[in-house]
Length: 283
Ligand SMILES: Nc1ncnc2c1ncn2[C@@H]1O[C@H](COP(=O)(O)OP(=O)(O)OP(=O)(O)O)[C@@H](O)[C@H]1O
Image (cartoon, rainbow, N blue to C red; front, side, top):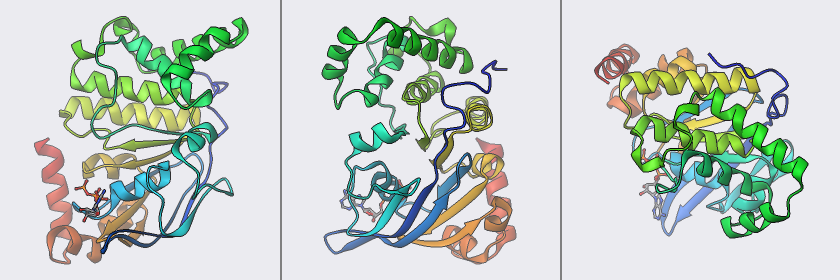
């Protein structure tokens, strides 16, 4: 397993996120209605719900791609609701994407290096200029961070390979590495195990838990794999038709008839448990 010490640059720097009364409409369609929840520092919170429930819309409001018409998003007490995505990245927001967003022709290491740019500028070209000006000490510090992330995620053997040559599961791991290179205070994972086989899913779940436990990073994820969500989350928030219908510990959410109804059309938690179990075993 990994050897990252408690003195890792990301440790002890977790942030609290508060979503308070957020509403978002697209024309006449209400994608989010008065959504409120908290993500505690150093915890894993999962945002779940059936297709079209509003999970991606919520994620985009938190990372700054969308701006809600009502409500407030606070990050360690700072109101970030009107801030743009690059400003939020500078505060410590980092995210991965549902469809992998890597430069496929570039090596793993170069992709991870691009994670740095969040703290320097708003685009890659400015980041490249910055590297030219950065002091030797800064460069050494960043290289140390990259080396530790690469060891941590067990990708040293592929660091000089082009991303396009890697399996899907490894590409997702490189995307996580790039997000970690931003030294996030909150890590937002958009369907981190979508499309993965069981072994890849278990590896990714282990790495996500390690990020929380060894770095203390606050983690918010959207994920459809219920087995994985229930295994590693501290807190689960359930959206349906843009509204929070349940939130709490994984076992509380699983036992909630409103959640069973949203997923199955009936309020039988036992049937939901059976479906989740079947889904996990089939994957
Ligand atoms: N850019 C947009 N323009 C118009 N409607 C949108 C836009 N983005 C989302 N919607 C609508 O808002 C609602 C919520 O969509 P959203 O993608 O947030 O749900 P989701 O829970 O992430 O779904 P899925 O699990 O299928 O990804 C849906 O009815 C969707 O069609």
